[in-house]
Image 1 (cartoon, rainbow, N blue to C red):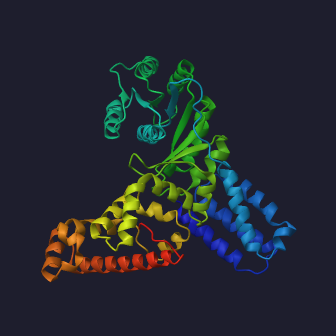
Image 2: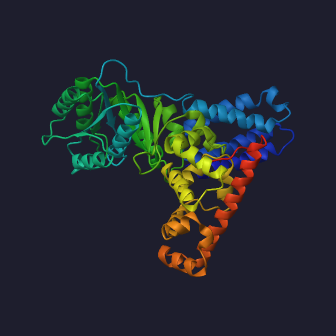
Image 3: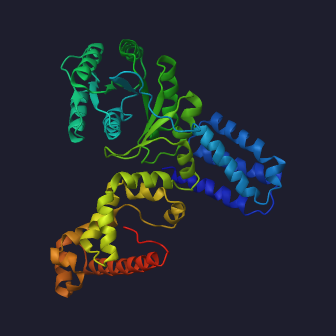
Length: 440
């Protein structure tokens, strides 16, 4: 997410921080490069122009230019203005009043509405809600069946009818929710390849009939300014409450995320960052600004870990480490928990400084975890619990069974022994008041 923009900005910041003293010309030149980086990321040109003008006005103040670290001061100004550009603070769904709460999901065809509806249902269920997904796309072939299939995979209820009268579908779904005690109704409405009068009339009628708590516009984050233009045109016809950016795990340059809030004056509420039903993130402007500027997002990383890691299992593992009973089977469980947190490359983006290692050629595609998993699966239970018994013939058998080489098996066993040794040292330091033993 935003790799090229982050790399370009880091180059500019490196020049600014490298100067012990800054002049107005240095600042102007640096901000001109920042503007170029924003435009290359497909940021709306008016948004980029206003953003740079705001930063420049503050950066040329005497307090900044005469400070001990003027370069770092300017980077902070860019960060603060970036947070403001993205919306200042996180804005959650507003689901007040008596249930069932109605959420309409709208957008153009192909933007990822149906997938988002499923992810949102899963997200709300984790929050203690009882969501009902509604197949209200009566135009796209098999759209209703697609939502039913995705709902079944996520173990979420889906309301589907055979008739194609959208207003009736909305009324019936609301009645079904009341009868079955569902407290949130999420409507997957129809999209088009382009905005037309019939589409908007239908959505406006549905809004008037159901009086939804939230209308969310779904934009394809990979389409850049096309997504911003579609969001603006939708807003002229349908006053929605918030924006969702999908496909942000792809080659998105960042233009939509950095422009859409300023152009529409509507908050971004969610980012969809992967294919799994769990790959939906509430939008935090400060955290995204940190990622864009290469500072990482440790808070989101910790939240993902808390959602994926069983505390009781972590305590048992900690006890095993203290007793030097950590095995390859335990190691495999830890890898699975990391995998459950999401794609490895996205997790590493949240760690400050990791973008620099990626630029140096570090592979973060997750293939190594898959390889390690295959090697451990090819071992017997005895071998997992006691790797010391794995001799040459066993290594050749494990390599054949896992589709890897003997060298790969040797490397894993060596790394495992190094990890155990490091854990023992950390445990000893913990007893002396130093760093405590970590579960992984």
